[in-house]
Image (cartoon, rainbow, N blue to C red; front, side, top):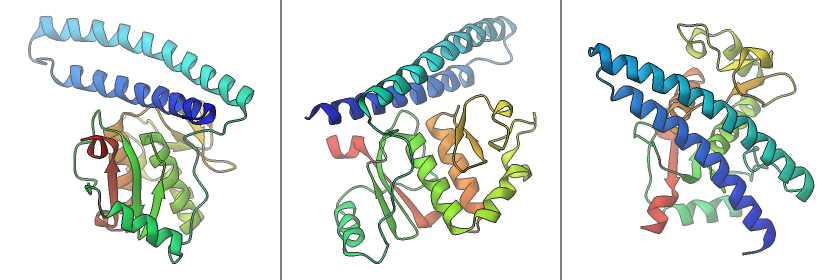
Length: 224
C-alpha cells in the first residue's frame, strides 16, 4: 500500500471511529431501563460524561485530519467525488462489478457497518468508505439534480427535529458539527451511521425518489 493510500485509509478509519462512537452512545442509551429511576440516573450521568469526552475527541479528530490533509495535500476523504456519467462505459463496468456483491437497501440497519460503494438512480459511486462520504455524495447528487429544491430543506419540517435541531442550515452556528456542502449550505454531520441512512431516506422521499433506487454495498461483505 502506497503512503498516500495508507494516509487515506487512516483518515477514513478516523471518520468511521467517530461514527461508531455515536452509534455506541445511541445503543447504550436505548438499552437503559427508562422506567427504572436508578438506571436512568446512571444513564444520564454516563451520557453527560460520554458526550463531553466525545466532543473533545471530535474536535481533536477534526483538527488532526485537517492538519494531515494540509501537510500531505490529500483531499478530504469524505468530500463528494467527480461523477462519472451514468451512460458511460466506466459506470456500466462499475455496476457490473457491484452486481457480484451483496446489495443492501435503506430499510436495513447499518449500525457498526462500513460502506464502500452505492448506486443511486443507476449511477454508481465507489470509494465512499464512510457514511459521511456516502451522505455528502448523495447530497451533491440531489443538489445537482435540483438545487432550488435542496434549498427548501433549510425550512422544511422533515429536516428539523421536534427540539428545533436542523439538519441543514446557512448558519454553521445552528449545527453541532457543520460541513459545507454548497457555497452557502451546511449539513449536520454529528450523526451515527443509522441516522445518516435515515436522513438519506428522508432526502429521497423529499425529492420523490423511490428508496429502492438506492442500493448500498458493505466492506464486511467483501471480507466475509
